[in-house]
Length: 196
Image 1 (cartoon, rainbow, N blue to C red):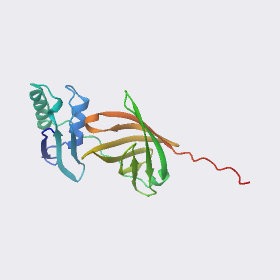
Image 2 (cartoon, rainbow, N blue to C red):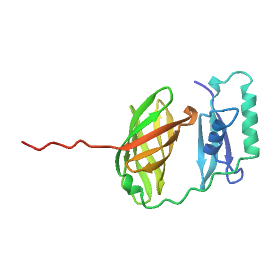
Image 3 (cartoon, rainbow, N blue to C red):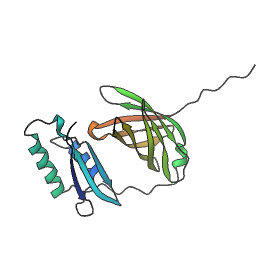
Image 4 (spheres, one colour):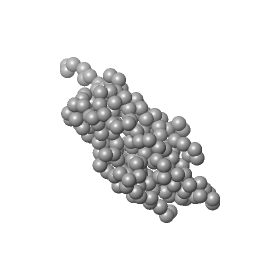
């Protein structure tokens, strides 16, 4: 058991969402990993990050607090607006074999994309857990999110990739577990032989 600190704000007043703040904290110095985040543009303005301090050393809370305060007081420029989804999500319909590379290990998951004209929906199945996925496709750019319930908590995946033929390559952001590269390949079904 560990205490959890939740810091909440309105991104319509402080121009940064929880996931944007979490990514900035992870990508800049000092590198800070938060336990989770919420909020999204343009409509989910209620934003937050969560801090679980069980791996922190005495005194580190001051550096973390100062960095978070500085970013909330003067947020970095927001990312460019996402392009509107185009009716190409249906080209992904079917099963895809997902390979995740964690640096010190790897995992093989399965993605099931459902046929759709504008939104990307389906199921993300891991080695032991599975969950729904939702996202969008704009030209070759593919973005989707999923979450698995693991031992009373949620493990979130935020995928950003590019479609090239029967492969999607990109990165996945997993909150406190950082960012990892991924490759998804369209599943190749074995052809059954002729009946005798």
